[in-house]
Amino acid sequence: MPTIECDETTARERLEAAGVDVEPGNTEYERWRAIHAGATAVAYDGKVVVQGGSTAQLEAVLRDGGGRVEAYFDGASRGNPGPAAVGWVLVTNDGIVAEGGETVGRMTNNRAEFEALITVLDVARGYGFDEIVLRGDSELVVKQVRGEWNADDPELRERRVTAHELLRSFDDWSIEHVPREVNDRADELANEALDDD
Image 1 (cartoon, one colour):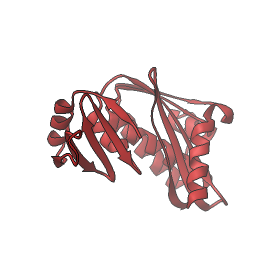
Image 2 (cartoon, helix red, strand yellow):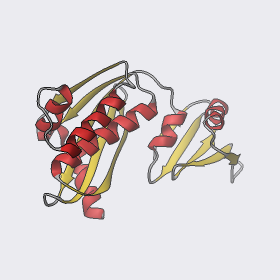
Image 3 (cartoon, helix red, strand yellow):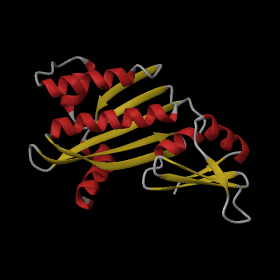
């Protein structure tokens, strides 16, 4: 349950500017409440607590944008193709900003890896980061995004185009291949999503 230290009046103004309905709080301690994209924000003096299944979009509206983020991503498929899921983690100098995992249907492992990349890019863009350093354990995805390898599969080519469109949202970006053990949290989140499905 993320807690965002902030001025609750400024946070309310950000939400209202983003078109989110803000309601009075339910107790004498709650300043206001807002529901957006399946998550709830509750404001107290000097902070907003965000809760729910998927808090990333609501957090993105509430937090100050900008800065650099390290983004770890991983896709998993049980079978090839088979049930698939993605996992991702956003990290700044302050620690983990957000993380998540979710199922993405039935697909190959390579497609799941691209879906994980696209998901983490979309979340990081929503947070308003200016720079992103991407880290994944799929050499195929990393080298195709860098343009070092061609994508023969039409679905993977399409996903690479989508990734490049999202990358244009950032002032600066890089992508690097890392060993699986460096990417273990994203891997764990993808596999947990498959286990829970």
